[in-house]
Length: 390
Image (cartoon, rainbow, N blue to C red):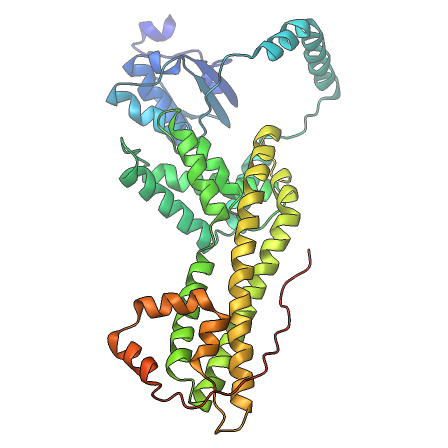
């Protein structure tokens, strides 16, 4: 009252939000304009204007709850400040039985824990620990190019391909990366993995139904094998050159060398998938930010997709090894006994059919006339299995 008499409007903040480190606000979107502006200042700058004094707010975490999503544009700024978003459904029948039956026991346990914490005078984390964790995570955890590509593709998918579009602000995207860095750091890693990106299904949606679509997109990215598409494109070019230049020993040798490099790359990718299949559950379970049910769902969905990728790579690897062996053996025989294109047609029928389907008329004419492909020498084919035993 004395401050009011002196034309100073000063609030009592002790025990209230400006004095809190962790806060919970129910029905947060029903606040009036003055409170909304104050909340934005607290969330953005951790500052509170109290009369003529601007004080620092020690807030570490603010949890908001609402029975309805914000509809007016004036609430968009505040809504965007809540980084992690989770929809909480109704308690199931099984959960309700457990909840009602154990409420007294839980309350006793909470009271006992609180008393123990007060008596010991210590807690697991101090306020400074939280600040240090985020600072260290941002400094030490790297953001791989593949993660950046997923974030870029995801925002493009949300804003360009979904209907209605889902807007993702630059601020939200930057804070999402910081969240992924903290998730990796607290899981004992120095680099963000694609599995950490699964958290984005709880970050980038505007409406709850969009979370599942984001989750599906992220799962497709985890199981995608863009490298296989590139390898297939490269091999198609090598196969085409082989069909056109089988009479040239030097070209055979060069093609065999290039195929050897492609074989090594495919072997490395195959080993990576084999390792992912064996370590998949370990990676997911090691992420402290995924719940048990969510981790089990991720592992069960990814395993079949990785198995399919392994099968596709093994099929291509067999083709690569077959063509490499054919060319290496053919390059070693007498000059007058050269390879015949029919070996390629017989040993690699589907690849040959695809080549003929897309070949130019001149290429077809050359093959039909046998130009540059004299003789028919049975070249012994020695192929050693490149596959990894599981």
